[in-house]
Length: 406
Image 1 (cartoon, helix red, strand yellow):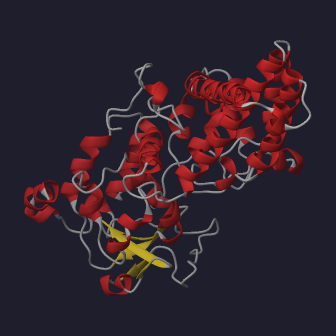
Image 2 (cartoon, helix red, strand yellow):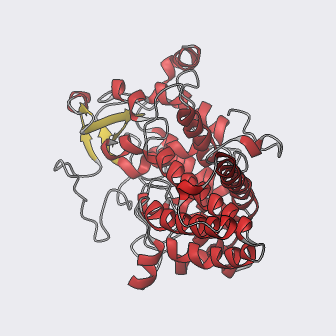
């Protein structure tokens, strides 16, 4: 591929000795990813101490989906648990397990990786390859490609691709403690921090009751809202047609009912877009801890931990608090308005289920959902200010927010 040829022909086969910038084999000692607070080495599940030196032959043995290691530059990463949540799908990685993927990862001919992809690598760090060299040409090209950003993001990225500043990226919060009380203090660094994703489990609140209400498995959404939507639709129909059983409706009446439900679903797609763009992606003032915390609670948490399955759909308790005044207002318009609202609820259920699937499902190549997944990946990891549609790209077109690469 053209990019890989560029790398290999760039600077003496693109390598330098393994002691660049004063580090031995690109590593440093005593950092948070390699040692515990008392200076003792952490241990990996395969009884490998983090930061240990491994041979290429050792890494090559871990070439299966259930035991997946790769080399990037001179570092070894255990990406086993990442395969299921890899935004591009696990299948494009499987052929490279146990190998050095430095050039493949950097190549735009193969698969475009964002800055966040390199930062995420630090979450899977295992050790270094004995005697391996750092491909300085790759590092230079990537820094030139991605480092037009803030000081924090630049520092994290340089740690990820140059391996000269320690084993882990800089973080601004203590992940061993609830995160919600901490985010308001981030100030002007919040926006960069929240859009630097990590693969961690997030605890929001110190209080268990609040935490339970904030964490939501995907299936809770249809379990809670489909019966409610059905009840609202049924009571609206009985009010409109004064009937006791659905089979008494004529074909024309069914057509009218279907049109109202479809109108509600369509109205939801617009609401989905507007909420996502103007509320969830509103930039809170750097000098307002309250608004920063509120933004993180509404949506920022999802961008920070996009692989956490309990942070992908909206929990029913806060959703009910938000939707109740909307329902009461719509009810003032009568049964027709309530039937449209029921259609909106159906659209919401579909949206949340699709959203979960885009993160954790594996849609087939060439399918509608595969296109949506690729589209949503761009929104999360490349251009957070574009691609606000989740269940559909429709509204991004008239509002001119289609990502260039979508």
